[in-house]
Amino acid sequence: MVFGWGESEQSYNDVQNDNVNEGSFGHEALAGAASFGAFKIFEDRQRAEGKPVSHQFAKELLVGIAGAEVDKLAETKGMDFIDREKAKRHAQSNVESMYDEHYVQGQGADQYDP
Image 1 (tube, helix red, strand yellow):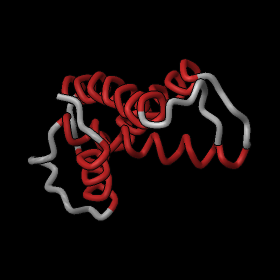
Image 2: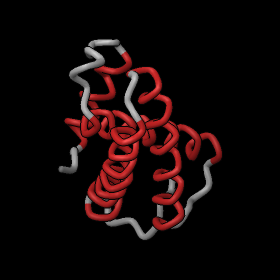
Image 3: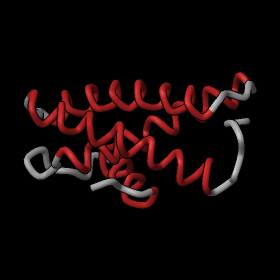
């Protein structure tokens, strides 16, 4: 299951506000939180630099950032290796879908331009 913007943002906010019980926070919710967190990091960085990048490069950056966010969140939530790897796969798929939905289809841009 791929989370959309709303679900990912809600998971992100839940994690940031510590509104989750470690036992009930599944890998899908963690993936959504990591995906949204990756977008925040990516967009802040790109706006600061002001450089346009290709969609492919932007997605590669986002996948890497999402993986790092999963590692960070999984550690704080006490997830085991298998759940962390599932969350990484979900986050990678989720972040690519979110990017396509927002920038490629939503804005029709030929590249990401902050």
